Every structure is written in structure tokens, then in C-alpha cells.
Length: 199
Image (cartoon, rainbow, N blue to C red; front, side):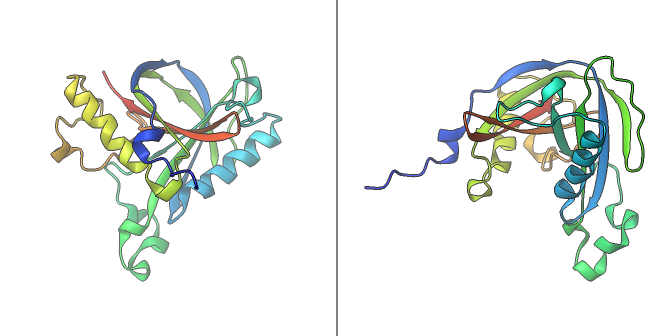
């Protein structure tokens, strides 16, 4: 008899509070209907150009490189920034802004070029949850809601400026308070860690 597929709740880690360190990062932003792939390809090529390895089977890159991504819509007119995502696609919601960060090894002296900038990620405290096999039935976005509910239940204020589900209907963050996503591998299994910025 075939093994029953694990549901989302069976694939979730415990929620914990973590402190991410301040770091210099290579940063790239893409606007479009598939910005994760577009920005990821640019960051990957930039890292390769500078001899920096990316995510390994163990889940982290060589030389301490860690990749994060986040939606970045807050306070921005998406349609106005990219006409390709306008009326011909029947709605601006199909166009999204996505950032990718790659942490750089301590002491690395690199300058940005092209679509990649080098800047400081301030770090800070985050509530973290991880999802095993995140792309099964595309269920992973539901984990954001669980993470947010946990902070409300624990009375831990977030840095998104919202105090209830009603005004946190969308976790589109910005660079000052990013809701980070990190894809990594452990023992041949893919995970996505999600980091909600808290105070």
C-alpha cells in the first residue's frame, strides 16, 4: 500500500526566535511575473563570476554564502515601474517585485556591477519556521500565516507595522523589514525557511 503523502502540518518545523547577524550582501531586484527566477539567475551568475560558491547539499554555500529572497511591494507602484506588467497582462497583480540577497564572506571587498549592488543587511530578530518539501501542492505560503498567528498569540510585535490579520493581509515587505525566504537542502531533502521580522 503506497505511503500517504504528508500534509503541510506534518512538514513544518517548530517556530523559534533567531537573531540573524549583520552582513554585507550582494543584492538584486527583479520586476515581472517570475521575478524569483530572474533575480536568482543574476545573483548566481554574479557569485560565479567572483568565485563564490552557492548553496551546497548541506544547505549552505562554501565560504559562508547564504541566499535569501523576499517580495518587496510595500509602498510601490508596480505597474508604473514596469509597463510589461500592465494592462496587456490583465492586471498589475501578475507583476511582482522580488529581491535576492547572497551574504558575502566576512572581509570580502567586492563592488556591485550591472544589476547587482553590494550593501549591508542589518540583520535583527526574526520568527522562523521551516517547511520540508515546500513546493508540494504549492502549500508553503500558508506557513506565513501560521508564523504571523504565532507572533500574535505570543504577543511578539512584528516590524511590518501590523497588529492583526486584517491589516497583515499580505506579507509584501521592504528592505527595512524583509520577510525572508531561504531555500536549502539537508540529507537530500529540500526545505524553505521563512523569517518574519519581529521586535
